[in-house]
Every structure is written in structure tokens, then in C-alpha cells.
Image 1: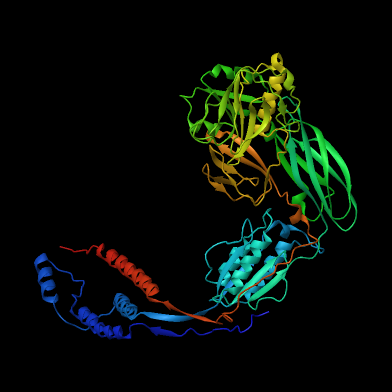
Image 2: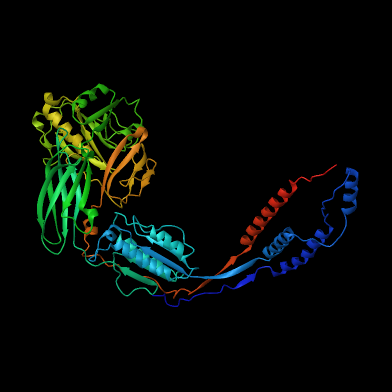
Length: 616
């Protein structure tokens, strides 16, 4: 359907910016005079060089009847074009401004009742709209994921926009309805735009702004989906993982599903569960063997395959890097006996903040850092009144624990009556760390969070780690390390559409599709638009895997797509139907002049290479 007030423009008015420059056409007769005075070469047979020279000398400066070859007309054309370029010719082009918003979110991958894919049908509708535009119209194309943005600068013709639209693909990332509504409202309020075309999975609540045309593909699609796929390890010594997979049923009737977990093509476990419409459940797998990667599949599959698969990695069971800073680095030796821990010991003089970049947990014994650590940290008998933590301590000749939090993960299963710590110190009231265990004259264990990192401080020494030789102290130490590294909590991986910071040492990221992207450590990686396993490749080819899933059951609910409410400010009235633009032709003329000059130069050069044959 043509746009209202559209028109076809079959003629483009022309004009000259400097018509007075046409007076230079009076120079063209001079070119004819130059040809009349030019020496006319003749072929003459002579018996000696002297006669040849005398004939040439007498014939050199004569005027005669002009013999105009095709080079003369080329030079005349060059001169005429130069004068025309000086006059500044232009044409007036008529154009309109359009914005096209294509929803390329994961919801557009769904198959509709007739078997067609939403995204393919949306592109067909957009192409029909583009074909109905005029050749001089300008088009800006936007997509919705990972955030609404234009795919390129404004296209100068609908044909160029069609080529770009045909190359678009739907991503595995969900759209942000609020951000999409804000974009449509902004475009519909822009008086420089004649019209805005939107095609996507979200309907728009009427009344529509006058400049907005909507193609909504929001017909309900029955769908079932996997949500989060979490793994956790309950202790350092655990030889299995506990897996949990969320499942949502967004169909019209109750259904029985099977969730299967596999690794390296081998099925590890499976579970059946029945869900009512709009119900979310979970499949538990308490004893998954240790593998590098895991895949969960939902059966039966449906019309949105991307959320029937979820991935997870063994990040929860990888080795924990511990940085141990102490004037007695030998105290760290016992930690090496704990499975899954790698220890690096430093003296305070050798320690630098750069050491934290390679650590998951830092332990400072009898010392504190000069700047706030950037990792979760355990402080053992820290000195008082340091400028970073500002501990207030008092000496303790007897450090028996008399009270503790019974439900705290740090105190879990610890028999404090058998702990028997030696001399130490009590903590006074701290501004942001709270007591976990206390003695007669103050706190002995305190913990808190700062700058998104966990911190624990103890008033007695936990080290060296003795294992079964001092079981209560060993359990307390393991509890603290587990709390600092997050053991016992779920490790759920990452979501499509959510950017993350590139870890230190990463140089390249290989996408699940095989595409590789060069990156820099510490920068934001926003191209998280595919589900699957991402390879983070560092120096020397060291590779870390990250699992990225849709993990958004709201986006998987294709029965209840939220409607967008567009509140566009149209106080400026309807945009102008046509924008008139002056397009200079001088540049095109100059390019023709250069081409003709090169052609003439080649011909003259070839003629000069001819050798006259003279017979004695």
C-alpha cells in the first residue's frame, strides 16, 4: 500500500550555480586557431637530409586549410566540459526520509501455524514497503538486539536498504520491550522523518502515531522452554555435581516433558516431569559426574528450537587459585593438600596488586594490602588502624569462642568447643563488617562486603592447615574458603543479550558459530547474541569455556507478548512530504575530463613512438 501523500518524480530540475562562467565558451575559437598554426606533417621522399630539412623549415609555420582529426574534437570536448564544470551545474533531487525497525530478537525465530518463520515473513513485508518507495528516498534501518541500534549510516536509496535487510538474521537474544518502545516513540516524534515502519513480535497499543506503520507477528505460539541450567559443588572434596534445570510450559494443555543431560555425546541422566499450562518446574540431577561441558535437551521439541537446549561448563569445579601473602609463606604449605586448590605464596615485600589478577581468593596473614583487593579476601590477624580496613583490635591471651551464628555458612558443622585457638586479638566495632563468632572481650571472626567483594577477618591464626590433625580448625578454614569462592551456590553461566567484561589475558573469543572476534582484556564484550559454548582464547592458546543460554522464560512465553505503548510527541505536525536537495554535477564532469585527458595522452604517446622511414 503506497504511503499517504506519496508522489512519483519523473523529472529532476537542473540549474547552474555560476552561470556567468559560461562566457568562457568564447575561448573555443582559440583552439581552432591553434590547429591552423600547427605544423602539418607530410610524408616526403628525399635524396638527402639537407633537402628534408629545407622542406620542413619552409612548411613549419604556415597556416593552411585545417585538418581536424578526432583528437581535436576530444580537446574541444574537454574544454567545453571544463567551462561547464566552472558554471557549477546541479540537479534538484526529491527525497523522503524513512526509518525501518526490524525485530531480530529470538522470538522472531518461532514458526507460525502455517509453518513459516516469523522473521522471514517480517523481512518480506519490509521489502514490499521498500519497493514502494521512490529511488531518491533515504532509509535508516534499525534492529532490536542486543540493544536497539541502526545497522549502518542512512542508506541513500531503498535498493541499498533492501540489500542490507536481506542480509539480516535473527539472533538468540531477547528484545527489551521498554527500549524498543522508547526507540519507536523517538522515531515517531522525529519531524524529519516522513514515516516509520516496524515489524516485530510485539504488538503496539492503539492509537498509533500518524507516522508509524506496524506489522506485529504476535499470534500465540505454544512453546516449552528450558530456563536456567545451574551446577554446584557442595565441597572441595565432592566428586559429583548437583545439576538443576528450570522448565516452563507455555502451551495450552498439560504436558509431560523429558529433560536429558549429556556430555561428550553420552547421556548422563534424564528426568520426566509433568507441567500444567503456564507452570514452571525444575528437573534435579544430584549426582552428575565431572565433565568439561554439559548439555541439557528438552523433549518433545517445538516451534522455537533455540530454548529447547541449554549448556553448562565445569567452571564450578575448576581449580581455585589462592594468593597467600605472609611474612611466613611456609604457613601456606598445608593448603596444597586440599583438592582443587592451587596456592601462590608471596612475602609482603614481594607482593604487588598485579598478583591479584591471577587469583580467585587472596589470604593476607599478619598483613593488609595498601589498596582494597579486587578479589574476595581472608585477613588473618590483621594489624590495627590500617588506612584501608580501619580495624580496631585489642590483644587476647585467651581466644575461646563463646558465641557464634548458628545458621552462617562459615560456622556450619564447626565444633567451636574443640577449636582451641591460641593467642590472638579481639575486634572492636567495625563500620561495615559484622561479627560471626565472638569471645569474652569482642569479635573473633567478622565478615562483610565491599565493592562487590567478600571479606573475612579472623582474630586468631588458622594456619598452617593441618587437615584431620586439627579437624575443627580445618572445617572452619574450608567453610571460609567455600564462602569466598562461592561453593555451595549455583553456577548458572551467562545469558544472551547480557554483555560481560573480557577476563584478563583473553585475546580472542570464538563464538558458537565459529566466528572469531579479537578483544582486549577489561573491555565490555556485547556481542553475546548466540547460545552455546564461547571459547575465550588467551596467550599461547589457553582456552576457557563459557556457557551462554537464552535463560529467559519471559522471552520464551509466546502466548502473552507484551504490547508496546508508544507515546510519541507529534506537536511538530506531519513531516514534509518531500525534501528537495541540490546535487552537484561538477564532480562527475571532472571525472569525465580526467578520463578523456588520459585517453588523449595515451594516443599522443603511441604516435611519438612511430619511426619515420627515410631512404638515402
